[in-house]
Amino acid sequence: GIRVKLTSGWRNRIISRGNVMEENRDDRLPILLVDDETQVLLLYSGMLRSAGIEPIVSLDDSRRVLPYLRENRVLAMLTDVNMPFLNGRDLLAQVKQEFPEVPVLVVTGVDDIDTAVDCMRLGASDYLVKPVERSRLISSLQRTLEIASVQGSVFAALRLPGSTAAQHRAGKLVQRAAGIGANQARPFPAQPL
Image (tube, rainbow, N blue to C red; front, top):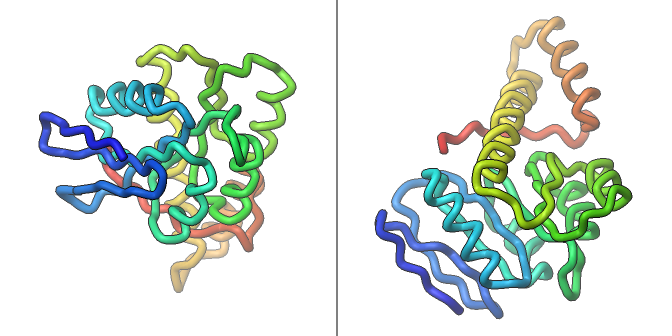
């Protein structure tokens, strides 16, 4: 495994060949980065940290994502498409099936309109082509988190006792617009960046 000591007192969590290293100073949910290239993971985690977005968990093996998500909640996930074992498109489909509340951004070197459309249909929040500029990565992630926060508030309102019929109808409209069925709606807590 690789350990990266951050000047802010945080440590990245990089899960490499089964080794997990972590330390959180609060209970904020992490951003999950998935790419088979360690240098890309370090680059993106550095970009996010420089914008104050922490904590970050990095996985260099896409087969570890679903087991990780079954044990841990995340704020959002960024994934590559071309990876060994489980490609990003199939990973995206599985994550959205099992964890529909997790926003997923696809960041990849695959500059193909069919792949982009397919990923968006599967539920990707955005599709960014490498090399991605820091400002584009940060703004896409922030926009995705803002949308997820609004959706989470609506989903939570759907479950509140005493919710009005109007609130329930509004929630159903947002679910339909987001392409999420009622049986998939789970509260997604808003977390500060």
